[in-house]
Image 1 (cartoon, helix red, strand yellow):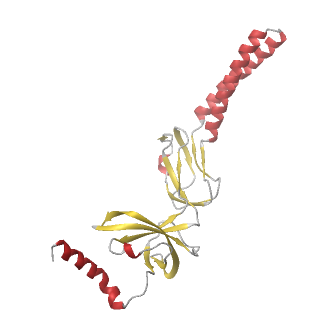
Image 2: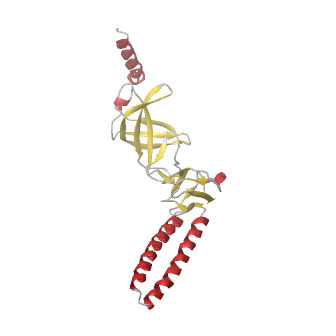
Image 3: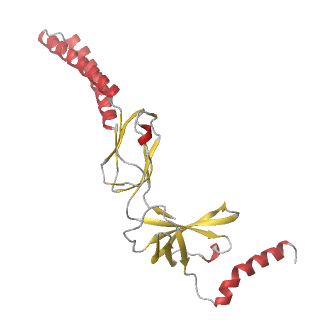
Length: 238
């Protein structure tokens, strides 16, 4: 399985409603491209409210200066500072109503076209994006073979969508915890592609062969069976 080396989740920066969506999973995007917008009408109303209040207080502040009313100048200055802080917060939230791509890449999840007008909570996952380069390969290795896998071993990968091309890979990380899939205990191993072809896309699957040493054909074909028979014989006391 191919994954992006820098997969990133894009979440709703503020609580609100989806106003528009411009992309969907599978689309290629460029850095800072607007992916979706949240409804900013309430924030704009709030901004106008505080801006009007600031304008009003600023006029009173000028009048207090003209009257040399130092006490009133101090009070109004404090109020204006508080309102400016509120305006700054609203402006920040307004900037966040535009969800932008953090880098050039491809969206691997997120189709909000049917959710226009729907509410979203702050922190809710909206899209996932991966770069179009820097892929890593996830290998699932049977427990009987994981002992043969070492860091920096090289191998070949053939993908179902590109069966004619053998892609060079190199083992980078071997995770020590197994997962149970289809009745087997499989270990996750990460490998990196040496010279990634331009047609690679996240989520592609295929078959990989890792070079672990030399042995006779007969030994290779029967090694796994002999390991299993040895384990079963010991388990049943033979």
